[in-house]
Image (cartoon, rainbow over all chains, first blue to last red; front, side):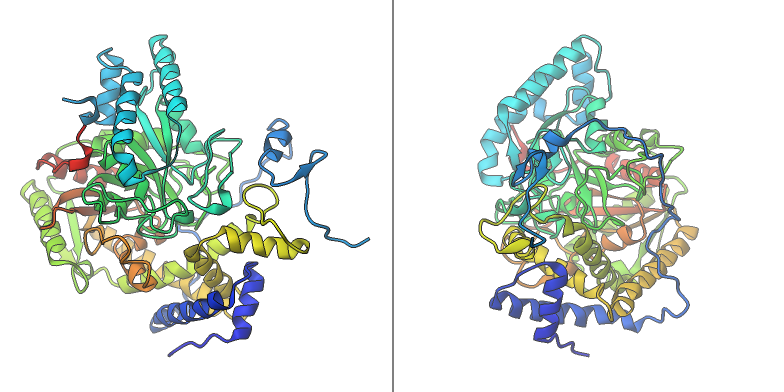
Length: 98
Length: 487
């Protein structure tokens, strides 16, 4: 079965992925995804009725700890990596209009 | 004999005995890097003075009796997806071109505790997505055996640096074969331990349920020693496993009498190069001569591992790579209108084509309406693959096969057809899906002189079986030495 990816789907996936693709990239992405999905459809040959999805090979549980600060104040070292910072905070574009 | 001919364990011994120093070892590595690096491009970040300074520090501590670990004074290269405090860590991506971590990954810390001295950060496929090291934003790495060929990937810089004696050993990471396949292409030993054995803390995530850190080294003894050092339970990694026995070097015994070894018939069929097949079967024969019981069997489901892997790994990658948004670290686009446009432009300019391809695929398979059909289907397939291995390990101690269907392809021949490139991972990928340990050992060269790798796979937590088999095999033959690795 050949998969067809519509312009709308590529547009939508671009929004989910937070990627802005050029027209050429979009066309390539469509082709790539169609051929990957055709290939992935091979999994449909397998009867997986009643098989539990396995996200981890071992039974893993969430690891909890007490809500106590264990590390020191690393804010200035951390902010040194920020593209833009001011007053001990990350600077981002305006997100809420006044 | 040049100091560069020593193994990591051999060098540590010489340093302990006062026959060599950490500084001499680092100087030898630097001389080698200056000789071959222009051609090979193993390193993304290498600061000669800083490396020498670390070696001097280490030597002082060794002489003062403060540094006594099994790798004290031995120079190591680290794949550029492991955070190193104060040293740039790029994941071979433009989006992290200026990222300097404020902490080191747990595996690197464990190495430093054991006395290893960091040389620099090795090149890789961008975010470990690729099988050739050609998707790096900082240029491809070349195979030291033949520079017209790729070193494999994604730990291509790591494998090439070991083969070319640009380090004494390397740390890599393996999500679908990224240690074992380049080790095989570069004629070195590479090992991925059981999932959860080495902490992933500070390893920049690609596919979290599949990623494991492991060693690339000159021989099996080095590999076992390094793995012993980096294995640890770490509460900072929620999937870290508390293991009772990580004394892997105990398995360095030249004895496979009675060991049951299975060769999956499915690994010897279509697509496998004839020369690779012959070398693998000859290696199996060697182990049989040493007393192992070797037989062929049907593993089944092999052809479903790759499609399942690409769904799962891409899904996890699309989620893991959401953190690269131009706010907290890394690249930010120069011009933008508002927050969302900044995110989108930053990511579109910062990520390369293969990374975008996988983020798109991952976002799609997780999206509403497709989640069950693709993502859950892949997780169900994973469960079946695990069961197939469980059945195999009821009968066998070790599964033996090739690491890759061919020897290293030529540069520039792989990226144009992604699915064909993905098929190259067919023998390594299911090991990650099932969380198993795997090791690759060189087992000869093909007619054009490129190395062939033998892969040995063990059941979960049974590293000792594959180390023992690999060691016994290694004792049975002389290894070809990489021509560019000569000092």
